[in-house]
Image (cartoon, rainbow, N blue to C red; front, side, top):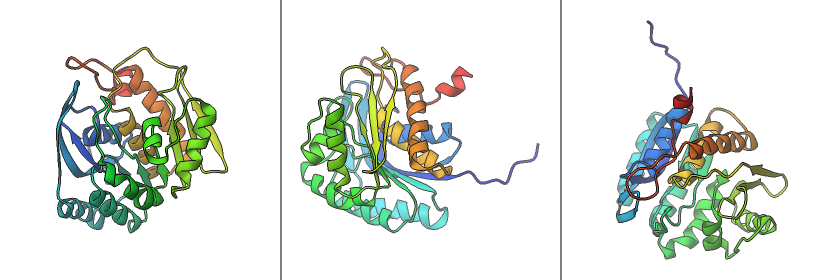
Length: 268
């Protein structure tokens, strides 16, 4: 059988490694494979992590991060970039500078804490996220805890989500997805650019194994953008993918298991 010469869309993740395979670089690459794009990676940190939490974290040198990024972008090229764990101000500022010079859509997941509540972003890096990273974002995807960290807005209802979105947009991203999954009732996310509003609703599934949802959503959005969709369509399709992955999430270890990035294949 002849091998096709067609080149798939290329998506780059800039994030930390999750040794348990549920989040971070590992979740991003699984999501990219599930969407039929070629996934590439820039490693920013190594974590010792399992279903119970993060036992340790080691940041890579800025020179190593910059060299990985330039190696991929200058030779292979990218149609979209997704960022995740950037634990220090110097890393945030370096990656923001790289994104600004790339010319591809950037999906920024402003990771502040892990699923288990472990801090993944130094407090002194918050201002760099606000002033350097978010202005480089095509789409920012904060959850409610990250919104509170960045803006001081504590969301308790859908009206609060609208205020939170406005506060994040003030930092400069083109679009923001405020993820409302931590609110009671069925989960709802708000996508807006300050003019358009899209409320994305899904049923809540009785499944505690949701490790990696934030990484997975941001990566899925980047994949859909790389495949040529506009932002509202990309976020809508990414939300549907993540909802299926949460539904199929499975237990690993003694704690919180991961979402199932390959659920469509297994369902088929």
